[in-house]
Length: 289
Ligand SMILES: [Zn+2]
Image (tube, rainbow, N blue to C red; front, side, top):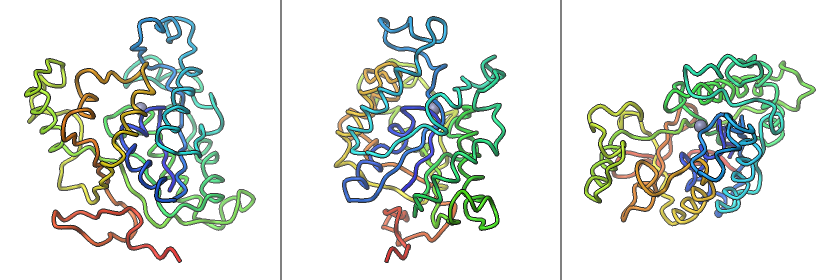
């Protein structure tokens, strides 16, 4: 299984229990992260000075957080696309950092894909996981990660494309991560019931600016057994994730909805569906012999 994410922490937030579950079941789980998230906010007051408005060393710190998170998930194979620092975080949409030379958003898509094609051809994954074409919530690097993954998948599958980069491999199943709106709605209600007063808890449940319609979700992966691993991995990102209130505190609610992760199958066979109409195994329908 190969996952292509934009920044350290995205893999844990969107696919942490899935990664931990399949790694524990013996699948080879490999992560490619496109940038170090250098433009991110720093939520730890003592570390504010390493942020982009100070020493600009947040990337060096986030790669250490990423390593600790992967240890919590039991994922041994992780790397930065093109090597650490090859593509710089572009920052949130509309920020001047979107224009910066060398940022991921400004990168020639072929350059980025050329770094991913050899990984696909060498690893020959059965399943690819990346974002949807909106990058989940519109961050430029998430959109670029989506484009890079989808383009590299096409190129890797074509025997006539750069044969020196390895033998062609056509990834049989492709999924896009999804946060169902229904889950966000129930999370908002649960936060309010718990007395949370964060921005998230105050959001109008009918006007949620991110997430996908529940009807688009094809696949639900129950990894609740691995929720403690996901929580530990989230806690490995103190500069990025505040576990005490708001969206991320969902993870530690009683009966947390974060133990199940949702995906949209966009290529390959949909496996057997459960009573709720969802596929429950990413590898279902594949001939793995
Ligand atoms: Zn991100």
